[in-house]
Image 1 (cartoon, rainbow, N blue to C red):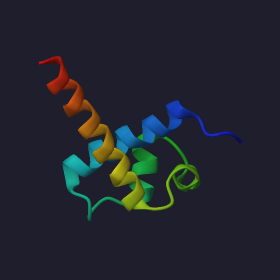
Image 2: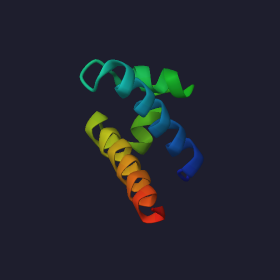
Image 3: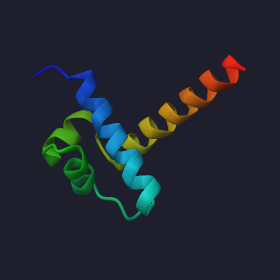
Amino acid sequence: PAPRPARRERLVEAAETLFSRHGLRAVTMAAIAAEAGLAKATVYAYFPDKDALFRAVAERFVGALLAAVEQG
C-alpha cells in the first residue's frame, strides 16, 4: 500500500509527544505505535528505526522554528 502522509504525520506527532515526555532512550517503537493508535509494523513501514523517526521530529521542529523566524 502507498504511504499516507497523514499517517506519517500522526507517527511523528506521537513520537514528539513521547520523546518530550520520556526522552529518546526510554521510548520504544511499540510505545510510539500505541500512542499513534497504529500497529508496530506500521511504524516500521514509514521509519526504519527510532533514529529516523527522531530525525523526522527534529526536521519538523526546525521547519516550524524557521517559519516563525521568517514571520518576524
